[in-house]
Structures are given as structure tokens and as C-alpha cells.
Length: 279
Image (cartoon, rainbow, N blue to C red; front, side, top):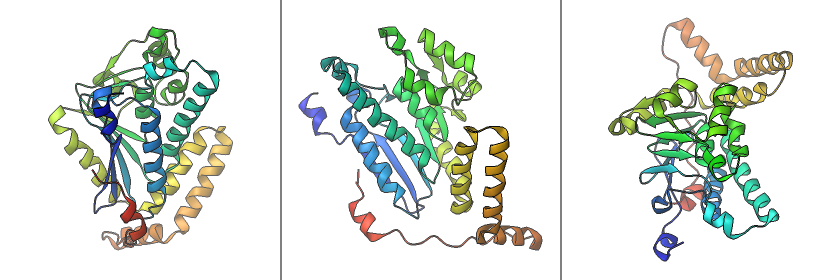
């Protein structure tokens, strides 16, 4: 890594007054590869957000022309050690699972190339909005490396045969194809990307945080179970949700034909605010 590149913070992290955390991969010169320091920075940010009881959503974007080119193959090739590879992929897996385990929605904002573990991160996010010039691939197979870990969220986003075709051929798909296959939710022109993400965010944060948190946890848990167990989990979640004050207020508002008055969020903890990284 060049000294100029090393001087850049790998990740930019800001939080706005709506409780939305914005994370931006900041290594454009290396196509925002998931180096060890990038993974560590992402993990630290996600752990930080997990402590923010007033967080409402997370947006993961990137600087430069690429969203994320996956792992740094040069770094990996320089250390041909099984133990190192195991640690690296375990570190990446922990970060990916942290995205899923956050109680707030995580949106990938994809402005360019998303390949291998970069495509994995898009698939791992709860939602994704892409620029029309973005492209997606799991092309490790081109260098003899089957994208095994990216395959885990990929096959949970799109039909199996379409995912397998990408994994076996290494071929890239366009943003429009990614939307058609279920990898991204929305595709817009490059100059409309920020506005479209904000539109989606505003729709989400208008709903109560507690219901979203319960729903997100249930969504992923039930997906990995049989249908009977899934219904049991879903029924229990709905009962708890219905008993919560936010649902009671929402239903009463429906009956009264008025807008619900959600309880205001707690103030952002000063101890967290002081340590929040700034761009």
C-alpha cells in the first residue's frame, strides 16, 4: 500500500440528526477493497452503531468509481498461510453477520463495481439501491477461487440457478439485471442515487424503531427454519409486537382515523457522540 493510501482513513462515518449513520468506504485508489484495516473499521463502526439506541438506519456507500472490489488479492497472495486465510475470512464473516444482527435496516448505496466480497456485502445488506451504471459479480472463479463466502448471502437473495451461474462463470450482471434477480431493490440514474436512498430512508424512519427491530430479527431467523417453526416464531413476534406501546398507539390511531404519535427517541448518548468518527 502506498504511503498516500495508508494515510487515508479506510472508512468515513457520520451520523445525521435523524439517527441515520452513513458509512463510506474511503479507499478509492484500491477500489475500496476489504483489506484487514477496512474490515476492522467497518466492524468498529457497526459495533458502535449497535450501542446507539436512537439509531434508525445505516447507509453503506463508497468513494470513487467502485463500491467494493472484494478482498485484496495481492495481500492474500503475499501470505500463503492457511491460518491467515482462516482468520481473514472469519473477520469478514463477523462483519457481514454484524450487518444482519443490527436492529436497524442497513442499505447498500452502490455507485459502481461490486465484486466478490463487495457483491457479498450488497447481498448481506437488508436493502440495496444501485446506480444504473453499477455492475455486480462474484468472479473469484476467474483466478481459481470459488466465491464460497459470497455465495451464502447471494443464494439467499436470488434464485439458486441464477446465483450458481454467476458463481460458476464469474460473469458480471448489470444493475438492471441485479434488480430483476432480486439482488437490489431500486436502480436509478447516477445523479439520482442519493435522492432515491433518502426517499427510501424517509419511508423507513417514519415507522417505529421497535417494530422494525423486532421484524428484522424475525425475518432472518424464520428464513432459516422449517415452515411450522417459522410460523411459531412469527406468531410469537407478532404477539409481542402487538403488546408493545407503539402498536397500541398505531392501532388506536387507525381506529381514531388520525396519524399515530410515535414516542420520541431518546437523545443521542453524549459518550457515543464524542467518539463518533467524523469525515
